[in-house]
Length: 174
Image (cartoon, rainbow, N blue to C red; front, side, top):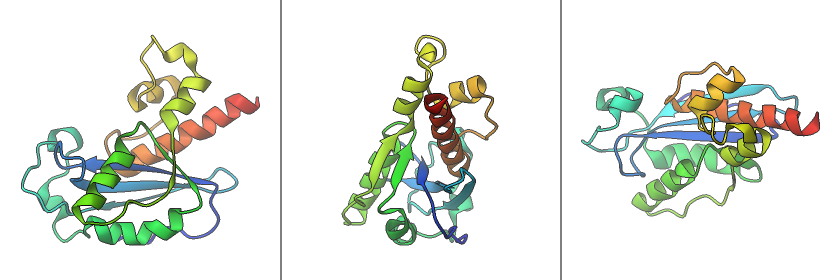
């Protein structure tokens, strides 16, 4: 598993990809770590969801072979739980928090008590003109804001969510 960035952070953005329609089937987890100066360091890891159902491979391209030997969700959560506590954690929609909670249930763990926020809500406030013009999903914001990322990669999507928040902060402060 890749070394998680260390140091001081303002907030994090987290994204997951799932193997199938079961929210707890997390097969990749990405975190964008935003430093006080706005610099973003991205961390991601494949996760072995211990499933034979890979029906979402068509969306993200991750297969069972890709996660062979990868850590289990509980191992990744052990790495992240303390570091992310006491910080705001952005997700782009409610999916990621619900997927983490579902995976915790599968491992009979309490979900982390992180301060979850939704970057979709931030984007709606910053760019209300998108309401009937493409919406506030990452694909639409990618085009509207000129972001560069590979959609449906957990690390890249987490970074994009963090960039949305940072750009929205600039709108609100400007």
